[in-house]
Image (tube, rainbow, N blue to C red; front, side, top):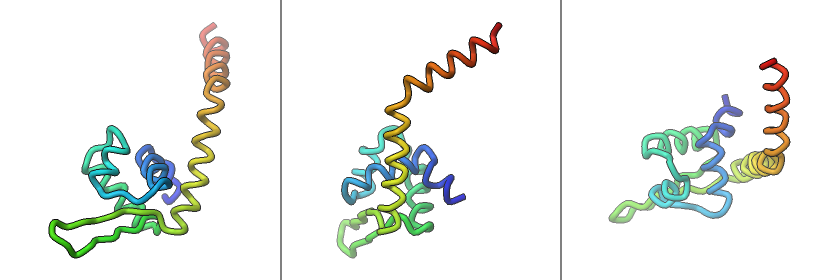
Length: 107
């Protein structure tokens, strides 16, 4: 389940964004384009529960909550980021392999 949390679509994007710096919820939502408020909240809660994200609620008005990576979160974010970069660099090869596979299956 933990692997699923960090490699899910939103998990990967949240971890990648938080590699850069801490974010408030609304900032993070803008940074992770296309994510709904509900899905971002669920993803952050799951990653926080797993020990990857730190939620820092400051007792001010209006309320301020910052999200950042824990030490363990930084480690897993680097691993996920490396895989993401590798996949991006090999997309052409993947597409070629798919075409070759589909060509043999379609005959």
